[in-house]
Image 1: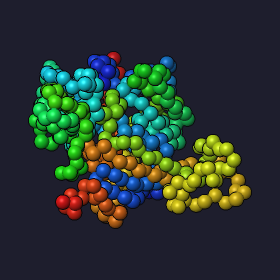
Image 2: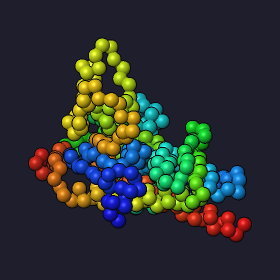
Image 3: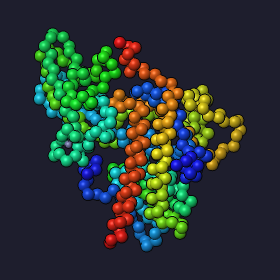
Length: 278
Length: 120
Ligand SMILES: [Zn+2]
């Protein structure tokens, strides 16, 4: 495959190009050029809603004498990011698993058992969650990280529960999304007029230019509107919840997008074969 | 089984109203703008295709309908197949390109809070 054949298909001067600008394990900044808005937006949407992670989905509460209600705590537990590297390959969705309820192939058990015995406020954090699987544990950034606060207890209060973490995606519940908001920008000078700025007096002072503007040609004063122009450079910037590495979220989203098209292609073949015999 | 617990629902149905192979509506379950908009664009890029559009008939129903109308040089199913092939190739290209740029390691790298060696 070469750039020439691909650009003939996509209608851009060359094949898609990626520019990586910043990369940390939980943060990435890159741009994607020579693709259509629909494809670029598809990648953004796939990163938010289609990349699977693990998150607590079932909570069995044995004892809860804290001031927080069972469902309140269950909700908080669900939102705790769990390390989810390679969950895509290593786990099945419970709904597609062969088991009747849940099993090791589609879920991970985490237990929490704390009691406050001292005469002071005790903080129950995500660090107290004991996972049965060393690969799927609550996210902490380093040894000093106190973990995520789940509840506070006074002397005599107790919290004992069993959590079942399952594989899921952001389109079912945001707790499964590996990213916290994806910055997606194109046409920073708004030459294409895809947006109309709300202003009080002056657009230039009220809407400062995006940092991506330095990579594009500023508009020339009095330049006529180019109604044939299309966006072709897209700027992405996002942080993960810590459940996955930022570079892997991008990879995973591309693989998932490709798998979606491939699945449909197979379905189309199956449908064609079925019609032949009818 | 899909996300809504519907079993045995076909992923793809071809709804064609006439014997004309040049037009068809493809009804795809459990998909949304992520797939449909890119597919619409790619099918429309085919010069033998006269029209391609998509709609999500109802927001609470996980379904998209993609309408394809072609010239006599091709069929709607062929156009759909070509669109999917091209998108798979495009994804592959972006994947290769992205992996190449990752390997170059010429981006600003900062381990930040993950830099446990320097922090300890
Ligand atoms: Zn199972």
